[in-house]
Image 1: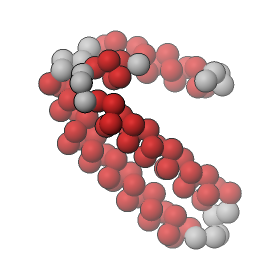
Image 2: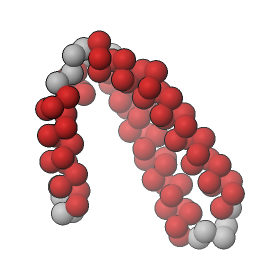
Image 3: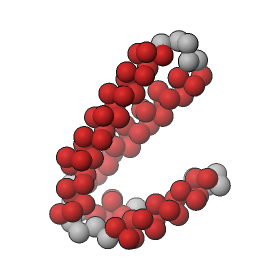
Image 4: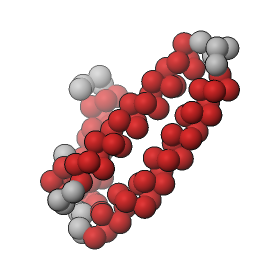
Length: 91
C-alpha cells in the first residue's frame, strides 16, 4: 500500500493505527452482540479510542502526507478499489 512505501518512519504509526482500528471493531462487535451489557463503558471506550486515533491522524499522519508529497489521486484510487473489494467480500 502507498503508505508503507511513503516515507521512512511510517511503519510504527501505521501499525498503531491498524491496532486502533481493530480495537474499535472489537468494541463495536461487543456492543452489537449484547447492547445491554456494559453499553456505557463500551461506548466510552469507543469514543475515547476514536478521539485518540483522530488526534494522531491530524497531528502525525496528515503532516507526514504533506511533508512527503503523497500523490493523493493515487491514494484515492487505491482506497476506492479497496472499498469495492471489501464490499464484494474480497480480502
